Length: 164
Image 1: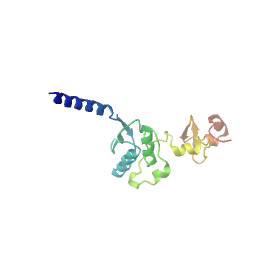
Image 2: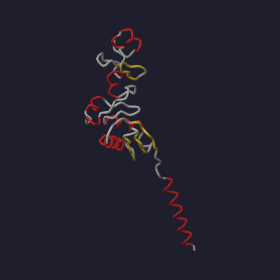
Image 3: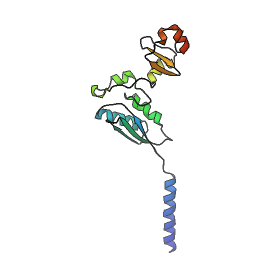
Image 4: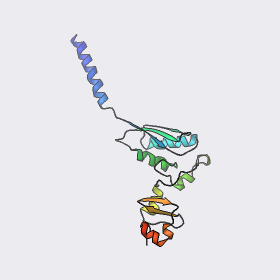
């Protein structure tokens, strides 16, 4: 009887100690633009390479369902990795150079460029320099396309985004 009690106690102790060390995962949905099964593979691979433990993208809803350990990776890191592979996410825009290299079937109708991309930040927000041909300018640390503040000296000074 003592042996039986000892084994029950040992099993109970093992169960509670192992469950306390289990890593908690966070599940989230991220909007990702794309079209086909090739897109699906690239998007899911990029998310997993960034640290997601699970990634499943639905071509109809454009939703990437991810699970990840928030102590090791963040939603932002996953989205940046997906954008770096050529696909716009809800918060990050893929660079035009990477997007242009996607297969023709993978090139989707791009979202409005309201979310800042790393390439646009580097061209005007970080350098405080807008390129006249791009029609971009910085406002509150984000690039806005379709603005002509750099072509207008007064607007440029007001926005503070262009070099003198």
